[in-house]
Amino acid sequence: MALLLQVLVSGILLGGLYALMALGLALVWGVLNIVNLSHGALIMVGAYVTYFLVTGASIDPFAALPIAAAVLFAIGYVIQRGILNLVIRGPMFNTLLITFGIEVILTYLAQLWFSADFRTINPNYAGSNYSLGGITIPFVQVLAFAIAIALTVAMWLTLLHTRLGRGIRAAAQNLVAARLYGVNPKRIYALTFGLGAALAGVAGGLYGTVSQINPYIGGTLTAKSFVIAIIAGLDNPLWVIVGGLFLGVIESLTALYVGPTYRDVASFGILVLILIVRPSGLLGRAA
Amino acid sequence: MKRIVWMALLAAAVAVLAALPWIGNSVLVQFGINVLLLATLAQGWNIIGGYAGYPSFGNSVFYGLGAYGVAIAMAQYQLPFWVGMLLGLTLGVAFAALLGLAVLRLKGHYFAICTLGLALVMTAIVSNLEIAGSNIGLVLPLHRGEVLFYELALGLLVLATLSVFWLSRSRFGLGLIAIRENEEGAAVLGVNTTLYKILAFVLSAAFTALAGGIYAYYITFIDPAGAFDIVLNVKMIIMAVFGGPGTVLGPVVGAFILSAISEVLATKVTSIASMFFGIVIVIAVVFMPRGIAHLVANIRRTGWRYFAENVRTHRL
Image 1 (tube, rainbow over the protein chains, first blue to last red):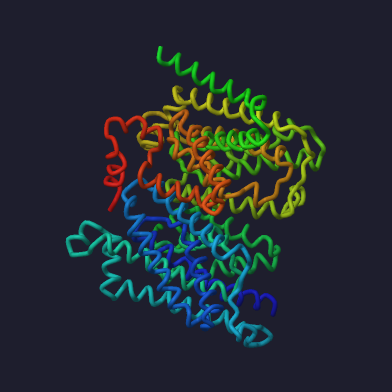
Image 2 (spheres, helix red, strand yellow):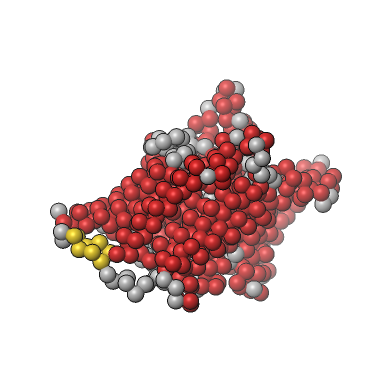
């Protein structure tokens, strides 16, 4: 029983992080109608930015997250303004393919500059944990979970109540009408993609504190983010949290009962199954 | 008359390629095997992605199944190579038919990502299969001499290209094009869209699986990460798209050109070589999204404005 509880807790803590990863993908998909296949690679870049801030400038990893977010926002803004805005009115396949190309470029740049070694971001309190009724809860994971959930909620509030959020939602609903009300589409698209990348950056930094990073983690993380976006639909970030927790728990349970090597079979099996059975998503509006 | 000249030129090109092992050296033959296999993969993708308009990101699944068919037959049961090819072909075709029934109902993003998911699932599943050597892989018996593989790869490419040529002027191929342009419209006009799409997927899978089988015996070692490599999907898609998706020779030309450039880069500037396909994707999608075939047909009329016009029609 304690083992099951322990696994559930780990699954939930991991799931919060998954939710944050998926949030940026869902935002870009919902507003720009781009399924960003380079999203996982942006998470990877965010992880490396945090890693080098921690090891190079000895900043606390959680204090380094805003810097990682800012760097990734700039990268995302430039990618959208410089490349994706040029093809966004083309066929769906073109935008899909071009983000695939960007993922390849980012992965190999990372391999070139950072080498293929596995790395982890280890703050000096990495070993500390809470003990609660026989269950061990690592402090770092709790912090990562809390930040992930807080950011997701903040994102939701931003979309609902700020001028930028209203602009983004207007652009998603009806670009022509939004234009008439003074929304500059080139700018709002670049800002949205930048925001998605910034979320990926924070998710990457947090991922580095709880797991190992290398240049090739992008593809898997994109697919996991996509699974969550499919489960959650695209209209409400709060559903993304539910989707993230669901995936995290399923993966942990699979690791416990079937075997750790079957984790990815479970998460991508869910992806394929959901798409086949109910392609419009499980929760909320159709993605 | 013009067609006869074309046919003669192509036949001559195939004859020169077939004679290459006796003209060139071993390095050239090895390079040739890779190019011919990649061209076959691009041609296979062309059937489902180019003609039917279903952008599969999971064709490496069929490649991996073909490779594992040969590897399992030869390494685990000591069967001859052709039995392995048959096994791989059966696996690939069966997988395409069964899954096609489910995934070909999906459209656009959903189809693309679902097939990408399939590639990831297969890597994970095969890593857990004892008969497939788990995540360590299988070692195949060694066959000396590359000429066999070279001629097999060439034969497969010619077969795939002839099939696509037949397809392009058959009722079946026209049905696929109709599905690509307007699926509901095609259905209304009496095209059995489900059957046509599955047949296209199966045909695509057959050539891809056979290429995987040849590769496995040639390279004599196969593991899950290599057999279901997603980067291979990137390569076959960009080669087909760069050359001209939905044309008979476009994917082959694309594969030859891109492989040659990437080979030169690999010897000169290794760091850029691995990024090369990513850079080509970005540039090609922005400036010539309909490939070389379309470029060649239009550049004389429009000149350099061709590239600017592509950007103008698709930018925000």
